[in-house]
Amino acid sequence: MLRKLFPPRRASAPTAPAGAIPPGLRIYAIGDIHGRLDLLDLLLDQIDRDDTARPAADTHIVFLGDLIDRGPESAQVVERALQISRTTDRASFLLGNHEEVFLQSVRGDLKALAFFTRIGGRETILSYGVPEQAYLGADYPELLAMLQERVPAEHVEFLERFEDLIVFGDYAFVHAGVLPGQPLTHQKPKNLRWIRSEFLDHRGPLEKIIVHGHTISADIEVHPHRIGLDTGAFASGKLTAMGFEGGERWPLQAVI
Image (cartoon, rainbow, N blue to C red):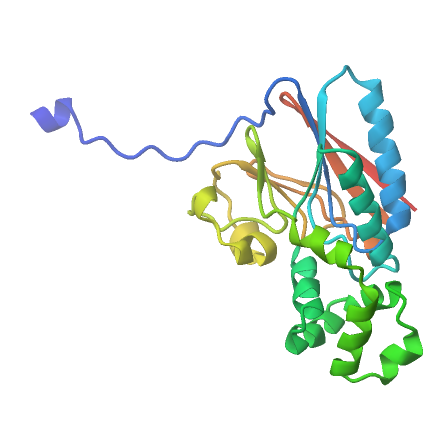
């Protein structure tokens, strides 16, 4: 009888976060740039004009990672981001998988360097002033020496300070995604930077709404539990951002 009157309590299913930023904050998240300085400058101008047109707020910009590779001006994008970081404490940078491999390469890992050249690192190496003929004629030790000679130490130190995860209210900003079923505090960097199918195929709610890049889509992907902002800028000519304030969010795009 007691079982019928007071059935055993079942664990409640996770509920989706409401999707709100704390009052007074305004967040702009920028998707994967991949060496497109032209698009980044256009998008930053859009963000500045959008921010100015809205009521005053504590505005932060979050770069979702993969500033480099594939596009033609990776070194210049890093320099632009570095200068931004020196003029404001309201810009945050997430370490993408491409930055991870770049740092491993510059530190002297020849296996990482070989992998780097296969995932778009050629364009990054050339953007640091390595002549194309020298690149084509070099073995990996020679290529490493050229790369280490040309990449400024301040660029390496800047990238080494990049973060893995940033939380504002109901949103968590990461590069690639999260492993479902694991609390944010227990997420491994390799998942935050590299995960795909386990995260992308997940359909249930997560601890936070995850805002990410890493996986290219034709346009912004908005789902109850995640928002994807990688629109393949290096190939599509479209760099995407999203603004967040209170319970609102809105897209911004630079297109060439």
